[in-house]
Length: 182
Image (cartoon, rainbow, N blue to C red):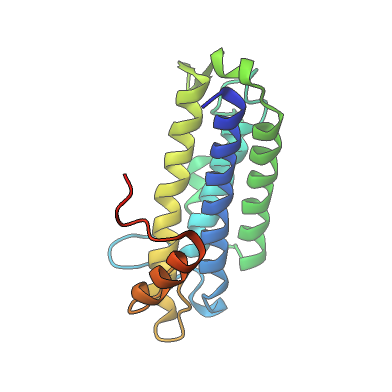
């Protein structure tokens, strides 16, 4: 896989995590948007706000400035007081706008560079993978919490339970039998 393919594949993963999170959050009623689960103090709204803040900080001036920006207040990202669904979604959207713009602007040559996060030098590929892992981690939290809060009306984001055989049959119809392939 060359550098351009790697960047395109990485972008596709970011977009998939964004879509999963947004589709899950959309199913949560406004009254439950800030409801935490168990001992975790974070509801869906706070998780969206935090991911947006993280993306904004890490990706703004990605190649030229430290990934932990001086204007970031990480602790504030975990507070729901005074927030609304709209304010958290706006912070989420801003972070994604910055991250996707910067990621799309990267070239294969940029993958050979070094950036810093909290003063720690990191190869660009490692910094991207670290951030992608962070996004994936919180995406899982958002989906799980949204599923819990939504209950029976939940609409599956992938293959619904009990539908695997049907899905696999459809895939075999489209792509042929893969069971004997390596």
